Image 1 (cartoon, rainbow, N blue to C red):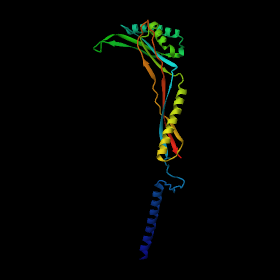
Image 2 (image 1 turned 90 degrees about the vertical axis):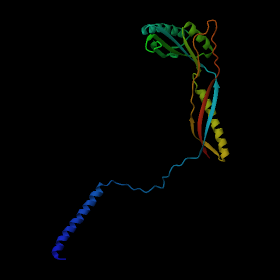
Image 3 (image 1 turned 30 degrees about the vertical axis):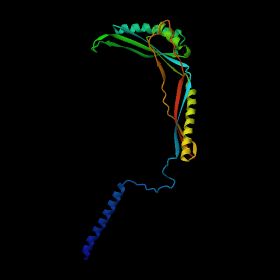
Image 4 (image 1 turned 60 degrees about the vertical axis):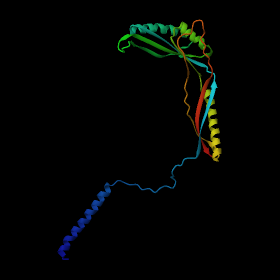
Length: 249
C-alpha cells in the first residue's frame, strides 16, 4: 500500500475505534444497575404444617338476672307543636313513675324520639301530626318485672311496651360455654385423628366464631287493671362455637 494511503487510513481507523469506545461507555452508563445474587441455601419455600381442624359447640343455660324494659308514649294532634307539647306531658308522667320505682338515672335512657305528619289516603294531604318517645329501662329484679310493667302502663301511661332478658355480666357463662366448646372440638379432633391413624398433638390455633343474638319478648298495651301481668323469666341460653387447629404429633 502506498505510504500516502497508509497515512490517510491510520487516522481514520483510530478515530473509528475511539468513537466505538465512547458509544460503549455511554450505553453502559445509561443501563440500570442489576444485582445478581446466588440463591441462599437457608431460604426455602414455606410448607403448611399438618393439622386437624375441628369445630366445637356448647350451650350453657342460666337464669337471667337483668330485664330490659322498653316503654313508649305517643301523641296525635292537629299541629306539630301541639303533638310535641302533649308528648312532653305524657313522657314527663311516665318518667316520673319509672323513677318512683327506684330506677337510677344510669338505668333509664331514651332510645327514640320522633315527630312527623299523618297523611290522608292520597298520600299528600296532611291530616295531623304524631309524636313518639321510646324509653329503655334496665331492671335488675327479674322476679318483679310483671308488677313493673303494670305500674308503667296503668300509672305511667305507657302505650308501647316490650321486655327482654339477659345477664348483667355474661362473661362467666360465656367462659364456661367456651371451655366446653373447646373440649367438644378436641373430642372430635381425637376421633378424626384415630380414624386417620395419626396421633393428635397440641392445639395450634383457637378461634371463637360465635354469633350472639339477644333474647327478646315483645309486648304491647296494658293488662286489665284487675289482673297482674305475668312474665315468666325462664332460662337464657349462652351458645359458643369455636374452631381449633390441632397439630399432628
